[in-house]
Length: 405
Image 1 (cartoon, rainbow, N blue to C red):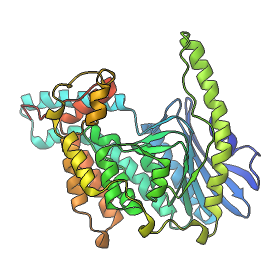
Image 2: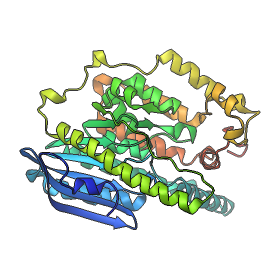
Image 3: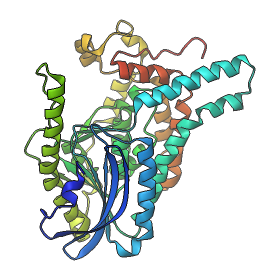
Image 4: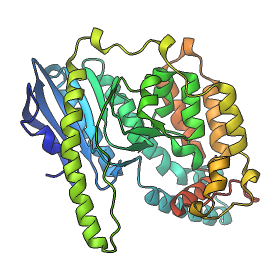
């Protein structure tokens, strides 16, 4: 098989032995494989998820994640650690946005037909249950990973480039995160019309505090590896001394794609040989060696007043009235000055969610379900369709409330 599993099943890592496969799922080039491994004197498991060419969390992959984690739970008495890893790719996506847009369009069309036929509000609301169902799958992953963390060390390896949505939220479910120096996380949902729904806000609150959770969820700005370390989301950053592969444009698309895929494979081998040993060290080191930075040493990405000022500018749709519908590439200077538009309904939902946060009484399980419900409610807002379409079309969205809403 190609991709990150090759380094996991190689003998290139000192003091490491791959013992046996525990679970396998494959669908085309995508796969999720769990192997039982030993590092020094400790035995654990490595879960490797790979979905090329973009490291994307597909629906069938979510079911495989659940089944694979069940295997870990069944064998918990044999294991001392679990490492989550995957491709060291330039882009990591939380899901298939085109698939979501297709589902949303069908739902809106069915809604119009049911409204015309006089259907009840309750029956119409059920049309959107597909969105909540997908969100629930992510929360089930959180439940399983947190159950596993009660008996063994859980480590997430964040290789490669920028992680969006679920690709950031899944590693956040672990206790310890190891970051590639070229990596980052981006909660881009507030630029689309929803919010992180798989516990991303909840886990950042736990690891990094209220101000950083507000910054990441509201501004939708990429947070890069050094910043993630400074705010205690990454426990360690591993220096990778070479660049991520880029697609060449020679005028021969077939040849360019072939060479790009080859470059990705070579890059995967080199990067995995650096990151996996670091993940194994963190999975097996003593408790004293794995302590996170104290809260007093933790930095904030911005001051609350700065966040509020920026959000108030970007959340007003009329600040973008001259740009509505224009391709982002044609208005780069204006967007650089203003920032990307934020969906008002997303900011309102985040404000309500974080407004209920009290560190002294914080219950992670209760809060993560509130986060899911807040996100699911936004699927009903027609501005989500606009945000999703604009993102895929790479144009400036118009987040005004529709007249018939």
